[in-house]
Length: 251
Image (cartoon, rainbow, N blue to C red; front, side, top):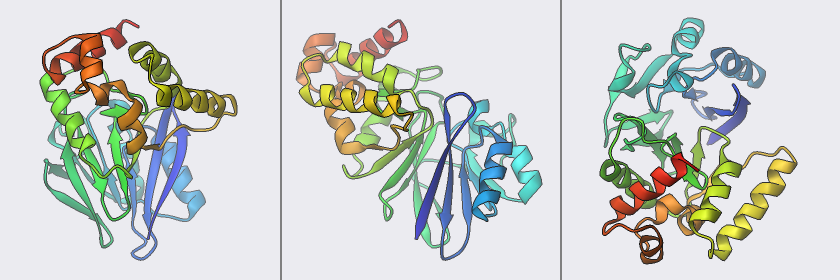
């Protein structure tokens, strides 16, 4: 059985420890704050045996060295991590990694960075998506191109709708404000935004997010919807996505 331990770290990151109760393996999903990851693992009585990086940014791989030094764990992630932070095994789209007997599929979700990957655990109904997609948003396009990023989001859209998306930051309230601007007639979005506001008022996390709900409300996942294309222009989903991303960058 897989258990996910979620905790806040840095200013707005979420840390994740993935623990298999049969093998007693523990995976750190990214390493924004090595000290906090080690403290949380100690509180749970777990020992980190692997790190799975989603991309190279320091708030995702910056704790690799310290955690490996403390635990002797193995570090897996995209090739872009190497040369910046420790990496033992480079991963590419279509590969499979395991925690105990549980498999995680590696998915190319590049666009935020050119090597960004996500980890989908189909048996557990979970996906760790880093900064590729957020609740009601997506990552900034620092390195990629609109067509590339849209293809990445399409891979996420194709996952089973019951999948829970574990993204890396608590950006949902600000994402909701832009989403309402981008898609003002969406009643499901307004209900979602109201729930988000109430959760943040109580200082509760809005992550994980259910993919089915994101498909109905996240404007970046709806760039192939005719209504969104009519509102934001673009003859293709990639062009509509590009218009939405540019608008969010200056919102």
